[in-house]
Image 1 (cartoon, one colour):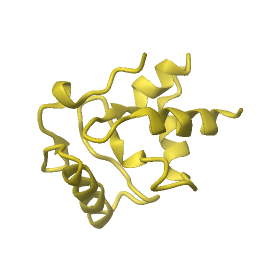
Image 2 (image 1 turned 90 degrees about the vertical axis):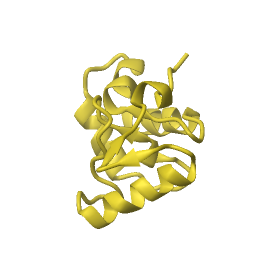
Image 3 (image 1 turned 60 degrees about the vertical axis):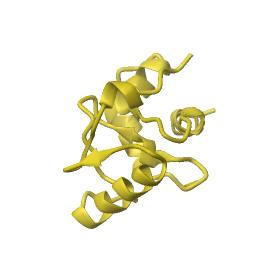
Length: 104
């Protein structure tokens, strides 16, 4: 299984109402390649089955969504997270530590 598919598999483990980070996913894959995790999610062909909207940066900020960093796409990402019970304000997760999913 290639790196991108491993990233997609981990994303599917993140439950509704929780988020993870690019770095935590890379770490779980025994890698430091958090930017490559971002590239995998940018190119996610399985959305929404693979919920890439649940991945944010290490400080809780939203970055790109659906291959774009436009505010329009960030608003879509925020909307999906809010629908799952994650509080987002100004493109940042509120109560980041409370929402952070810990991989086993």
